[in-house]
Length: 133
Image (tube, rainbow, N blue to C red; front, side, top):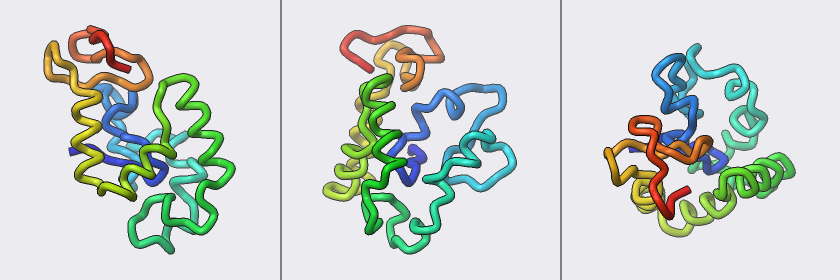
């Protein structure tokens, strides 16, 4: 369904993932096609993630680290989404429930596409559904 990054980002709603040209395969992919800024991400490359069984930051002994708190603050402010809340939901209810919630949250009711977290509208039909991100 969606690629969910270690930090709690739903890659399926990211502009880089949704665009047709220079499509990003998501933070969990280790390919050449991932954007440079994602490939250099401190969280994505964190050695402590290898010590977790889930592959998510919520399992780390330093959770939430400074970098994750900064990222969460930026996304709460700009995009009305909290990675810390996402991670806690995944921890408490599981990845499948989180993906269902994300589908409901970001699904465009007009065309069935995905609302881009960074743009606030559906990239397929350019509509910004009322009451959505």
